[in-house]
Length: 237
Image (cartoon, rainbow, N blue to C red; front, side, top):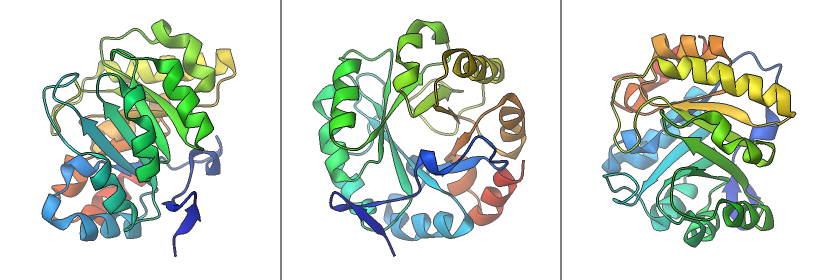
């Protein structure tokens, strides 16, 4: 049965997982699923032990691709009690953050590099009971956005250039995860470290060893003949 908050279902939140948690949080990326089968795909990964659903929103400007709008988020919200991390790969995210929260987002994750007002998005999230996350491209220095980290629930390290699924994992992400962990310790921040792009059981093991908390996996999960097996493998790395 779904737990309700402000009119939509709410899944397990970041705060439900302590730092002593041994298994990574698994966040299948909806962009990797077939649109004709969202309901069953989400049910399958939830039953397999996934705790989050990662939902990529692309505008064709910040990244050269298009994906979902708030209506799709609202539709899948009715199907699941997973924690929805809505990843806005869009320009001016402050214009759309509230619409996605109202549609069912539990966390709004935006890109530091995108044109827009980061502080405005944080305020919208705080005023509407949603978490705030910050995503950074592979070539963006982590120190560039250090002033926001104590206000983040999620720091998303991109291990591919954002915009397309199924790309090859960039090994530099391992060092960046370790750096993010160090920044968290130095600043007293409480964000969860997430990694997105090219995640499979092999790369996941490297990321977890470096200190990652959340594994975002799209193609590896939804393109598999046995998504439950892949999730089990990711949880066991």
